[in-house]
Image 1 (spheres, rainbow, N blue to C red):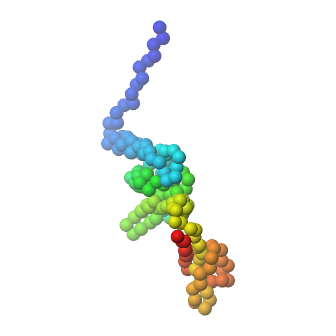
Image 2 (spheres, rainbow, N blue to C red; image 1 turned 90 degrees about the horizontal axis):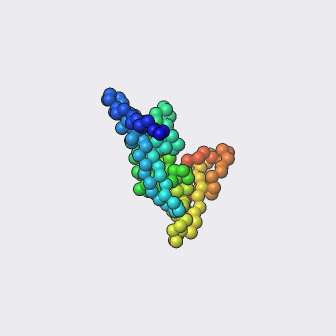
Length: 160
């Protein structure tokens, strides 16, 4: 008779450091499933995936924590965003009180919502330039030559 040896369970963490690492792994691998806006199927996202694929460091190089990643996952679910399609990013910036991280919603995610609205009738957009005589001019599109003036902003008109 061919008997298989019993499967050994991993030893339970004993030190505080091992317990913290086990808890962190549990948090990072927590799966959240939801159906993004206009998607045909559900998406499953974990904080570990966020840290690996969607998080951007601050200029000083700080990366988000598992808590930031978990918040990002839950915000994506609440807002119906699909980071795999470029709908959202977790972007870091340095502040006086230390690194901070925010979910940034891509313009494509907002346009997807606008385009399915029955009253939406297109959009115009462009840039605002300060000319040499210090007047502000709005030009359509996103291209401008430095000889035209200095970029000072952007604009958009949404038609309903």
